[in-house]
Image 1 (spheres, rainbow, N blue to C red):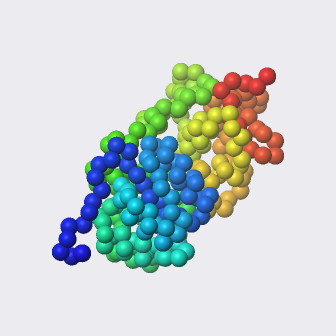
Image 2: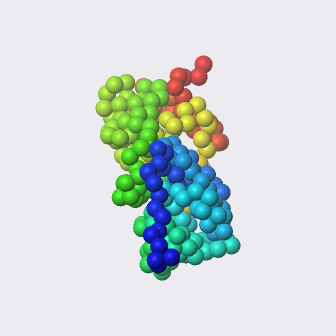
Image 3: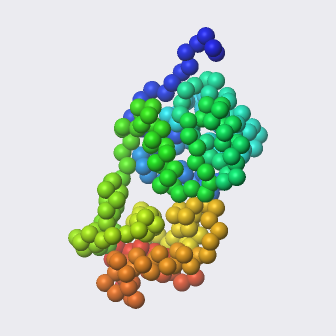
Length: 244
Protein backbone atom coordinates (compact mmCIF):
# COMPACT_ATOMS: atom_id res chain seq x y z
CA UNK A 1 0.00 0.00 0.00
CA UNK A 2 2.96 2.33 0.50
CA UNK A 3 3.32 3.00 -3.23
CA UNK A 4 -0.40 3.68 -3.70
CA UNK A 5 -2.56 6.66 -2.89
CA UNK A 6 -4.93 5.83 -0.07
CA UNK A 7 -8.59 6.27 -1.05
CA UNK A 8 -10.46 9.05 0.62
CA UNK A 9 -14.18 9.58 0.94
CA UNK A 10 -15.79 11.87 -1.61
CA UNK A 11 -18.25 14.56 -0.53
CA UNK A 12 -21.64 12.93 -0.06
CA UNK A 13 -24.98 14.78 -0.08
CA UNK A 14 -25.67 12.96 3.20
CA UNK A 15 -22.46 12.02 5.06
CA UNK A 16 -22.43 8.39 6.21
CA UNK A 17 -21.13 7.32 9.61
CA UNK A 18 -20.10 3.73 10.36
CA UNK A 19 -20.86 3.08 14.03
CA UNK A 20 -18.90 0.12 15.41
CA UNK A 21 -20.47 -0.72 18.78
CA UNK A 22 -21.35 -4.09 20.34
CA UNK A 23 -23.80 -2.77 22.96
CA UNK A 24 -27.19 -2.73 21.16
CA UNK A 25 -28.81 -0.09 23.38
CA UNK A 26 -25.90 2.31 23.00
CA UNK A 27 -25.64 1.64 19.26
CA UNK A 28 -29.36 2.41 18.85
CA UNK A 29 -29.04 5.64 20.82
CA UNK A 30 -26.02 6.79 18.78
CA UNK A 31 -27.78 5.89 15.54
CA UNK A 32 -30.89 7.86 16.49
CA UNK A 33 -28.88 10.92 17.53
CA UNK A 34 -26.79 10.97 14.34
CA UNK A 35 -29.75 10.36 12.02
CA UNK A 36 -31.66 13.18 13.70
CA UNK A 37 -28.72 15.43 12.83
CA UNK A 38 -28.97 14.52 9.15
CA UNK A 39 -26.43 11.70 8.80
CA UNK A 40 -26.80 8.24 7.32
CA UNK A 41 -25.73 5.56 9.80
CA UNK A 42 -24.49 2.00 9.30
CA UNK A 43 -24.01 -0.10 12.45
CA UNK A 44 -21.52 -2.94 12.90
CA UNK A 45 -21.77 -5.04 16.10
CA UNK A 46 -18.24 -6.49 16.03
CA UNK A 47 -14.80 -6.03 14.49
CA UNK A 48 -15.21 -8.40 11.57
CA UNK A 49 -18.55 -6.86 10.59
CA UNK A 50 -16.93 -3.41 10.83
CA UNK A 51 -14.28 -4.28 8.24
CA UNK A 52 -16.86 -5.90 5.96
CA UNK A 53 -19.27 -2.95 6.08
CA UNK A 54 -16.45 -0.47 5.71
CA UNK A 55 -15.32 -2.15 2.49
CA UNK A 56 -18.87 -2.37 1.14
CA UNK A 57 -18.96 1.41 0.92
CA UNK A 58 -16.35 3.71 2.44
CA UNK A 59 -18.20 5.97 4.91
CA UNK A 60 -17.50 9.61 5.64
CA UNK A 61 -16.42 8.78 9.21
CA UNK A 62 -15.94 5.76 11.48
CA UNK A 63 -17.05 5.88 15.12
CA UNK A 64 -15.14 2.99 16.66
CA UNK A 65 -15.53 1.38 20.08
CA UNK A 66 -12.25 -0.26 21.07
CA UNK A 67 -13.76 -3.09 23.16
CA UNK A 68 -15.17 -5.37 20.46
CA UNK A 69 -15.73 -9.11 19.97
CA UNK A 70 -14.20 -11.15 17.11
CA UNK A 71 -11.64 -8.47 16.17
CA UNK A 72 -10.39 -5.77 18.52
CA UNK A 73 -11.05 -2.11 17.92
CA UNK A 74 -7.32 -1.46 17.65
CA UNK A 75 -7.04 -4.07 14.89
CA UNK A 76 -10.02 -2.51 13.10
CA UNK A 77 -8.39 0.91 13.36
CA UNK A 78 -5.11 -0.41 11.96
CA UNK A 79 -6.78 -2.17 9.01
CA UNK A 80 -8.97 0.82 8.10
CA UNK A 81 -6.04 3.19 8.31
CA UNK A 82 -4.01 0.96 5.96
CA UNK A 83 -6.81 1.19 3.41
CA UNK A 84 -8.19 4.71 3.80
CA UNK A 85 -7.70 8.17 5.29
CA UNK A 86 -11.34 8.33 6.45
CA UNK A 87 -11.67 10.12 9.83
CA UNK A 88 -11.80 7.72 12.80
CA UNK A 89 -13.20 8.72 16.21
CA UNK A 90 -12.50 6.07 18.84
CA UNK A 91 -14.64 5.43 21.92
CA UNK A 92 -12.70 4.49 25.05
CA UNK A 93 -13.51 3.54 28.63
CA UNK A 94 -12.78 6.06 31.35
CA UNK A 95 -9.69 4.11 32.43
CA UNK A 96 -8.58 3.21 28.90
CA UNK A 97 -5.68 5.66 28.64
CA UNK A 98 -3.32 3.11 27.09
CA UNK A 99 -5.87 2.05 24.46
CA UNK A 100 -6.61 5.69 23.64
CA UNK A 101 -2.92 6.39 23.04
CA UNK A 102 -2.55 3.21 20.98
CA UNK A 103 -5.56 4.15 18.85
CA UNK A 104 -4.21 7.61 18.15
CA UNK A 105 -0.81 6.16 17.27
CA UNK A 106 -2.51 3.81 14.80
CA UNK A 107 -4.04 6.79 13.05
CA UNK A 108 -7.31 7.62 14.82
CA UNK A 109 -8.21 11.30 14.58
CA UNK A 110 -10.04 11.87 17.87
CA UNK A 111 -11.51 10.07 20.85
CA UNK A 112 -14.57 10.21 23.12
CA UNK A 113 -14.42 8.83 26.65
CA UNK A 114 -17.34 6.94 28.21
CA UNK A 115 -19.62 8.12 29.68
CA UNK A 116 -20.40 10.81 27.14
CA UNK A 117 -23.45 12.84 26.19
CA UNK A 118 -24.91 12.47 22.72
CA UNK A 119 -24.46 16.21 22.21
CA UNK A 120 -20.72 15.84 22.80
CA UNK A 121 -20.53 12.87 20.45
CA UNK A 122 -22.34 14.67 17.61
CA UNK A 123 -20.08 17.68 18.14
CA UNK A 124 -16.96 15.52 17.77
CA UNK A 125 -18.33 13.90 14.62
CA UNK A 126 -19.15 17.26 13.06
CA UNK A 127 -15.73 18.65 13.94
CA UNK A 128 -13.95 15.79 12.18
CA UNK A 129 -16.19 16.01 9.12
CA UNK A 130 -15.59 19.76 8.88
CA UNK A 131 -11.86 19.13 8.88
CA UNK A 132 -12.34 16.56 6.14
CA UNK A 133 -14.59 18.94 4.18
CA UNK A 134 -17.62 16.69 4.31
CA UNK A 135 -20.03 18.19 6.84
CA UNK A 136 -21.59 21.00 4.86
CA UNK A 137 -24.59 19.18 3.49
CA UNK A 138 -25.97 17.53 6.60
CA UNK A 139 -29.27 19.17 7.50
CA UNK A 140 -29.95 19.02 11.24
CA UNK A 141 -33.18 20.12 12.83
CA UNK A 142 -32.68 23.76 13.86
CA UNK A 143 -35.81 24.52 15.91
CA UNK A 144 -38.00 22.23 18.02
CA UNK A 145 -41.51 23.26 19.09
CA UNK A 146 -43.99 21.76 21.49
CA UNK A 147 -46.83 23.29 23.49
CA UNK A 148 -45.74 26.78 24.55
CA UNK A 149 -42.03 26.02 24.01
CA UNK A 150 -39.71 26.87 21.14
CA UNK A 151 -36.16 25.51 21.34
CA UNK A 152 -33.59 26.99 18.95
CA UNK A 153 -30.82 24.38 18.80
CA UNK A 154 -28.41 26.41 16.68
CA UNK A 155 -28.54 29.48 18.95
CA UNK A 156 -29.09 27.45 22.14
CA UNK A 157 -32.04 29.69 22.99
CA UNK A 158 -35.40 28.90 24.57
CA UNK A 159 -38.69 30.76 24.33
CA UNK A 160 -41.85 30.03 26.28
CA UNK A 161 -44.99 31.76 25.01
CA UNK A 162 -42.69 34.05 23.04
CA UNK A 163 -40.55 35.12 26.01
CA UNK A 164 -36.88 34.20 26.36
CA UNK A 165 -36.19 31.74 29.17
CA UNK A 166 -32.77 30.85 30.50
CA UNK A 167 -32.04 27.13 30.91
CA UNK A 168 -29.00 25.35 32.29
CA UNK A 169 -27.17 23.07 29.81
CA UNK A 170 -28.75 19.92 31.28
CA UNK A 171 -32.21 21.49 31.33
CA UNK A 172 -31.77 22.40 27.67
CA UNK A 173 -30.68 18.86 26.74
CA UNK A 174 -33.54 17.32 28.71
CA UNK A 175 -36.13 19.59 27.11
CA UNK A 176 -34.65 18.79 23.71
CA UNK A 177 -35.21 15.07 24.33
CA UNK A 178 -38.82 15.70 25.39
CA UNK A 179 -39.59 17.85 22.34
CA UNK A 180 -38.04 15.34 19.95
CA UNK A 181 -40.44 12.68 21.25
CA UNK A 182 -43.58 14.67 22.02
CA UNK A 183 -46.50 12.56 23.18
CA UNK A 184 -44.38 9.48 23.92
CA UNK A 185 -43.80 7.94 27.32
CA UNK A 186 -40.12 8.33 28.22
CA UNK A 187 -38.91 6.19 31.10
CA UNK A 188 -36.54 7.55 33.72
CA UNK A 189 -33.89 5.10 32.56
CA UNK A 190 -34.16 6.29 28.95
CA UNK A 191 -33.97 9.95 29.92
CA UNK A 192 -30.92 9.44 32.13
CA UNK A 193 -29.12 7.52 29.37
CA UNK A 194 -29.90 10.20 26.77
CA UNK A 195 -28.90 13.20 28.89
CA UNK A 196 -26.36 11.95 31.41
CA UNK A 197 -24.88 9.09 29.37
CA UNK A 198 -25.16 5.28 29.46
CA UNK A 199 -22.70 4.87 32.33
CA UNK A 200 -24.33 7.30 34.77
CA UNK A 201 -24.60 5.74 38.21
CA UNK A 202 -26.21 8.55 40.18
CA UNK A 203 -29.63 8.72 41.79
CA UNK A 204 -32.71 9.14 39.56
CA UNK A 205 -33.69 12.01 41.87
CA UNK A 206 -31.29 14.11 39.78
CA UNK A 207 -33.67 13.67 36.84
CA UNK A 208 -36.72 14.50 38.97
CA UNK A 209 -35.09 17.71 40.19
CA UNK A 210 -34.37 18.82 36.61
CA UNK A 211 -37.96 18.04 35.57
CA UNK A 212 -39.22 20.11 38.52
CA UNK A 213 -37.05 23.04 37.42
CA UNK A 214 -38.24 22.75 33.84
CA UNK A 215 -41.85 22.84 34.99
CA UNK A 216 -41.15 26.05 36.91
CA UNK A 217 -39.97 27.60 33.65
CA UNK A 218 -42.50 26.31 31.11
CA UNK A 219 -45.75 25.58 32.99
CA UNK A 220 -48.42 28.11 34.00
CA UNK A 221 -48.82 26.18 37.25
CA UNK A 222 -45.80 23.94 38.00
CA UNK A 223 -47.80 22.12 40.69
CA UNK A 224 -50.43 21.09 38.12
CA UNK A 225 -48.37 20.57 34.93
CA UNK A 226 -50.29 20.47 31.67
CA UNK A 227 -47.43 19.79 29.24
CA UNK A 228 -44.60 18.00 31.09
CA UNK A 229 -46.63 15.36 32.88
CA UNK A 230 -45.72 12.42 35.10
CA UNK A 231 -46.66 8.86 34.16
CA UNK A 232 -46.77 7.38 37.63
CA UNK A 233 -44.23 4.65 38.27
CA UNK A 234 -42.83 4.85 34.73
CA UNK A 235 -41.51 8.25 33.69
CA UNK A 236 -42.66 11.41 31.91
CA UNK A 237 -44.44 12.56 28.77
CA UNK A 238 -44.44 15.94 26.99
CA UNK A 239 -47.82 16.99 25.58
CA UNK A 240 -48.49 19.68 23.01
CA UNK A 241 -51.96 20.17 24.46
CA UNK A 242 -53.23 19.15 27.90
CA UNK A 243 -55.03 15.82 28.12
CA UNK A 244 -58.75 16.06 28.75
